[in-house]
Each structure stands twice: as C-alpha cells, then as structure tokens.
Length: 204
Image 1 (cartoon, rainbow, N blue to C red):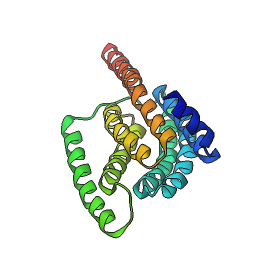
Image 2: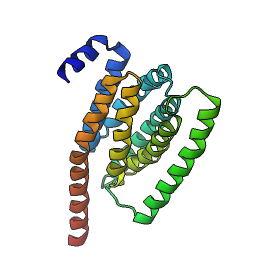
Image 3: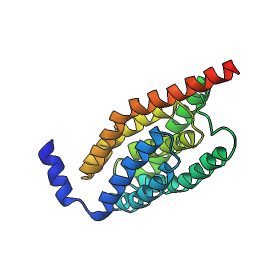
Image 4: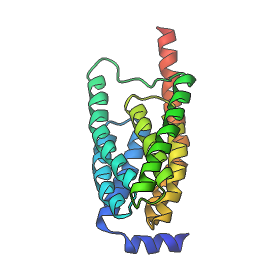
C-alpha cells in the first residue's frame, strides 16, 4: 500500500493535489463545525469538476458543481446563524424523512442511470448516479447541520472508493478511504454537540 501511495504521489497532477489537500481540510473543519470548511469546499469541488470530466464520471462532475453552489449556501447558512446569539444547532430529523429520501434516491438513480447508460459513454452510470444524487441530499443535510448526514456519507464514500479506483484515480480513492475512517469521529463530535444542546435546553 505504501508503494502505491508513493507512486500515486509522483504521478499526481497539481490540480489533483490541490483537490485532495483541500478536501481533507474541508472534512477536518466540518467535523469541528468550523465555518472555514466551506472555503476549502469551494477550492476542492472546483478542482474535482475538471478531474471527473477527464475520468468520464459525468455525474460526479455535476455533483461537484452542486457542491460548489452548496459551499456558498453552507457558508451563508452558518455565518448568518453565527451572527445571532446562538450558532446554527445540530438537529435530528425523523426516520420517515430519511426512508423517503432513500426511496427517492434509488428511483432517481435508476432513471438517471438508464439515461446515461443509453445515451453516453459514462463509466458506471448507475453507481455514479446513485452516489451523486445521494450526495446532493446529504450536502444539504450538512448545510442544515442534520446529525444523520454522517450515515449517508458512510455509504456514499464507501461506494466512491471503488468508483475512483476503477477510473485510475487511486489517490482520490485513498482520500475517500480516509473519509470513511474519519466519519465515526465526525459522528461522535456532532452527536456530542447535539447532546450538549439538548442538555442546555432542558436546563433552561
């Protein structure tokens, strides 16, 4: 594995290097609920739009375009909340909402995947569509600080490891492996923040 990482680092283009470094910065800052995570997201997603186009992962390119827009929305949402007495709190949504979301993601991926399969040279049209649609929903959850976003990312990032590895973007695949490893940390940190908020509300 170490030899593979060294080989990938030597072959790494400046664009992918920027994308990977800023993507890691985004996740670390998001775990800490630091607003500057959105600035790192802007740089990373803009870089990955070009990288995914080269790899013929078209829905991933569209996804990163959406990420770019959501980065600005996330910055606005968090900054506006920060101007008030209390910052945007971590919240939880009912299970029924998530079940409906998963059903909609599956249906959307089936339809979009079929279109890509028939009318484009997209690699992995169904898996690409599923991860893209799921990530669009999950990014919105992050912007609203919905605790359950971390469970979605676990599934999305695990699938993305295979997608990027198969398209010869091994270092990006390793980046997503790092994401998977850091997800429990994010989940615990956000769950602790949620519990503290509930305790504070009860005490008040």
